[in-house]
Image 1: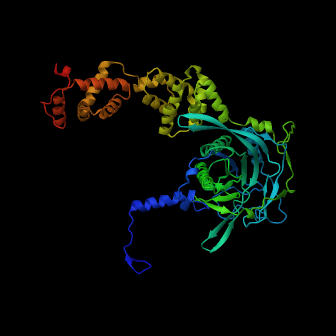
Image 2 (image 1 turned 135 degrees about the vertical axis):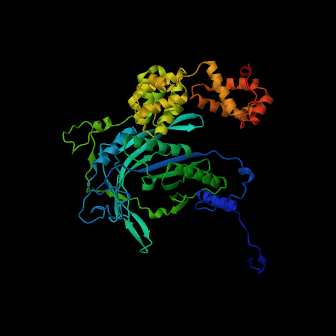
Image 3 (image 1 turned 90 degrees about the vertical axis):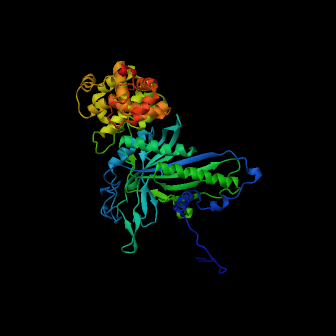
Length: 571
C-alpha cells in the first residue's frame, strides 16, 4: 500500500513484464531524441494551423573521420601499439613527456597516409608540417598534442559512394577537404580499488589519420554509407582495421538545417564510434532541429555534444575548447616531390613506388564490372561489398562469352554457398578459375543443377584436382531427362509421404513444396523443379481420392489389401 500526501491509502500499481520491457525500450529510444532540450514535454503539443505546412529544408552534413592506423608502434616513438597491454606498460620517455625527449616520426605512418591519399584521388602537398595544439588536460602530460592543422599531408580528394535504395543504386560524390596525421590522447579512468582517478598513457601517441570532408547536402543514409565506403578503401590498402572494442574509429559530424527562416547555426556531435550509430544520430538530430524550426524556437548558437556509449549525448561547453596551435620546431617539415630521385630509401619516400603498391580499388572494379561484365550498378556494388569482384573479373577475362546476369546469380548463390559450407577464403577461388568457368557453363546449359554445382565447387575447394566432367561422372550429377525415371522417383515419394499427397489432393497446394523437396533429395538434385512439379501434379490428380484415403489410413500397417494408387500398377 502507498500513502499519498493527504493520508489516504491507495493501492500500489502493478506492472507486467511486457510493460516494463516497453518502458525500458521507450526510455532508451528517447535518449536519442531528447538531448539538451525538454522535447518530451513539447512533443505533446500540437502545431498551430498556420504551421501545418512543412517548410523545405536542406540538410548539410560535414564529416571528420578519425581512424587508427594499422601499425605496430606509435606515431612518434617505438612503443608498442598493444591495446590489451596493462596500464602504462607501452609508454616511452617521449610519451611520458620527460624533459629533453624528442619525437621520431614513424615512417610506416607516412607511407600509409600517402597511400590513403592516392586511393582517394587526393593531391599530395609538397610540404607537410606538424603543429602543437595546446590542451591542458591530464591525458596530455606535455600540455599539447602534435597535429597537422596548417599544412596537411594531402588535400582536394573525391570519394565516390554507391547508395543502395530498395532495388536501385546511384553514385554520390563527396569532396574530401584534407587528410591529417595526428596523435591520440591518454585515457583517464576510475580505479574503484584505489578510489581515485588514474591515467593510462598506453594510448597516448597512437597514430591517427583524420579525413575532413566538406559540408555538403546529404541524408543520414548517405553519410553512413560514405564512412562505410571510406573504411572499405582503407581496409583494401591495409591502412585500417575496424575494431570497435579498440576504439579504432571516431567520427565527428557537423549537422546544419537550412531553410527560409533559419539562422546559420550548426550542431556538432563528437566521438561516434560506428557507421550505424552515425546514421542514427544524424536522423534524430534532423528531426530535433526540424521540430525546433516548426515551433519557432530555432537555435541561437552553435552547439557541441559528446556521443556516449550508452546512446545519448552530453553537451560540451564551447568556451572550454582552445583551438590555438603553433608550429612544432622539434619536427622539421617533410617535403614530398615525385620528381626527385634519391637512391637512399631510408631518407626519401618514393610516391611512384607507393602508388605502384596500391591494390585494385572499388571505383576501378565497379567501372570494370559495369562496362566489361554487363552488370548493373547494384549488382556490381553487391559483388564488391562481398569481395567477389575479382573472382568475376578473372572469370570474364578467362571467357568473355559468359558476361550475363546469370554470372551474378552464379557468384552470389553457388560460389557464396560453397565458401560458407567449407569456411574457406574467397581468394582460394583464384586457383581454379577454369573450373569455375566450366561449372558456370554446365549450369547455364542445364547439364547439372544448382545444388550439384555447389558440391562441385566444394570439391574443388577441398583439393579435388579432377575436372568438372570427371566429377559429374563419378558422382552421377547429370540432369535426368528420362520421363520413366522421373515418374518412378515421384511415385516412390508419394507412397512414402502419402499424407502430404492426400493434403495436396484435398486442395492444400502448400504441401506440394514438401513433396518436391523429397523428390529432389531422393534423386540427388538431378531433376529440375519444374519437371517434378508437373509430374507430381499429374500423378496426384489421377489418383482416386478414396483409395488415397484408405492408403493413408493404413500407412503404418503391412496389409496386403492396401489399394494400388496408380493405374499402371493395377495392370
